[in-house]
Length: 281
Image 1 (cartoon, rainbow, N blue to C red):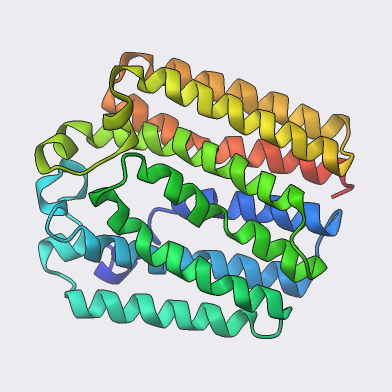
Image 2 (image 1 turned 180 degrees about the horizontal axis):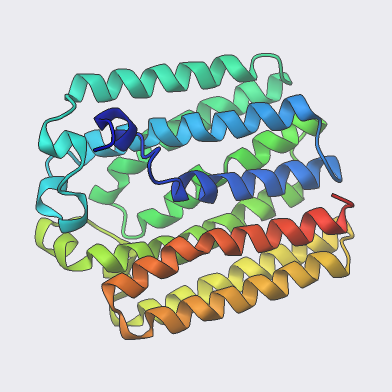
């Protein structure tokens, strides 16, 4: 079996890294108008892995009293006692510290933005107690690499960066509602709040609207940035992928909903591919 620390940090399940990486890459490529400086690209890619892993440790600490009662999470290391609460917090703090050290050579604005980014990552797991749609909060946390990317490359955060962040919020609500549909029966029993519960029988319509809002906002970003046919080809591919997800979840089958969630990697890739090709890689 995989080492408990690796499972705690979800390094055996890279989908979370990818869903955090794609919007960060969108921001880097748009800010640079193409391939960003390699040292900045490397710092952000390593930072994505470290901060996502730290977030997972905090998430499992926050959910330590719930995970054992949820089918999908019952074997997580904190739920089984393979990792202690203290170990989880120390791992999270250590990874966050390394991430902070990585950005020290970058623009001062990046360092300033890292503090709200850290707060968002650490506080998100607790929002499931009182937010009706914690997935929106997740979208801000997962998208905060976008303004940081602009700050690193340009030393400023223009309006298009915040539009891109908003697009990521809607995308996160879409894909994480698909994810929440998997756990809905268990979440109802233990009192966790999720968008799948909040939207109720309208959850598929809500997911469709969130995908549409994501694409509309990306279209606006493309217009502000003067992007061309390749970028819009990527958006068209992403729209097709979104329609496939809606087809998958139409019956609300838990396995199909989880498959749709995992497949969002390709939505993020399609947007990035169109963007990178349009900007000359």
